[in-house]
Length: 552
Image 1 (cartoon, rainbow, N blue to C red):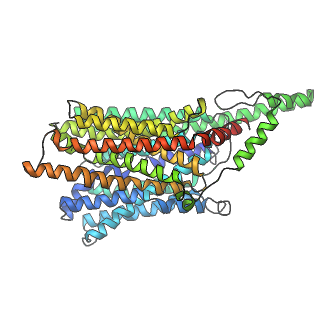
Image 2 (image 1 turned 90 degrees about the vertical axis):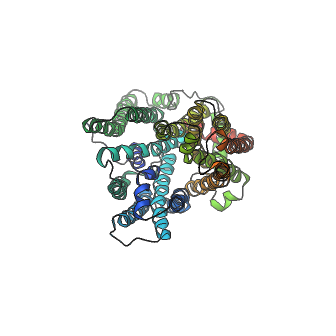
Image 3 (image 1 turned 60 degrees about the vertical axis):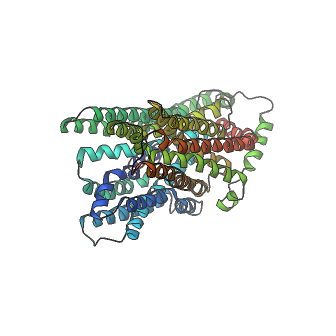
């Protein structure tokens, strides 16, 4: 048996997945927020201010995009690469969380609130470096299935919060201080060990779709397993032995992608061996027959054969001219286009309202009479709906782009329209509406995180993709601030002031979610404009790129 090569795109993908699995520490803020509040003598308003810097750091990833573009240019790729972006993220992750832990345990004097906000900003900023290195490298390694690979990477990032919570509940139960130290060490060490394997591989392998589908299946199995664990934990009290067994099974599931790399390597080795044997035999028999069979046997990864015709040479020449006409815009050039600002508006409406919904889901449940058990379950399951949206939108949009030639912005139109319906369902305040509405909003919110980076790479090119999509991501905290503070918070306080400190009933959030439903509908209409603007571009460039690549 051949030794597994460590410089393939499959090993790179597995390393990126494993890094993503420990990168979602921001989704676990609620675990250590209480100890942060008590040890630093913060009130709720101050704690919320620290939390705002968490969102700013995670979404202000322009520097990670600039560093990635610089580190992966042709002139620097031999000396540097995606590992440099991972290294910068690892340093920030350790510094941010270690200083927070040191403040909590008293290792350093209690810092002023501004310094704590800086610690949180640095720790959160690390996520953008991990995410940029993994997502953009994935798109470069699988340009024909960019939606699928972005969905996989973003999906595992969405699941990472639930994975880290399992680590906490198994090893650090009721020890949030120790958990803070773990956040400084685990993602840092994991990234430093794996970052050397994350590389750009400009190769086109025949079984790409099949192996990516295997990664997708594993992601779905892990999501289903985590969902089952979350639900059972809220129904039964797990003994320590059962929790350890469940954690070990989770680790085995996370290790299973390694089987895909081994299988891919074996098939590549077998295919090369068979090709060498066939070519040697055919060269002995009839050299001309080999050329004819090579032309006939060209086929894409889905198994569709390409049959040559008399116009092949003319089509190939047209394809090359079209592909050469593509531009890789930098950030300033992209910002001068209408398409950039349409994407920014759509994301401000979609991601901003989605964040506002999840940030207030506990208060919504309380005002509507849901029990603490029910609201806790809703919060825990949000990461699963988020994953399904991130993964599903990328996979489904890739499928229809290849099969029907559907321009990808169409799926942004659809998901934002469904998100508007989800906000209307929550606004209704009907029995069970919060369950149904949170599923719709959670799935569609997650969808934007895979659709937007993929559309960015297709419209503006992959060279500066990291810088451009991280700039568009700033729309998320901007929209969240508008909807959370200026809409939801303002209306809730106004209703509560009339009846006391708390508000109960549908009137507490109905108007807020009607406004957010209108905003997401506006985002859907903006995305519809982008669809019509780019439809011919997808027909002439993206589809030709796919056909040209699958022929080669």
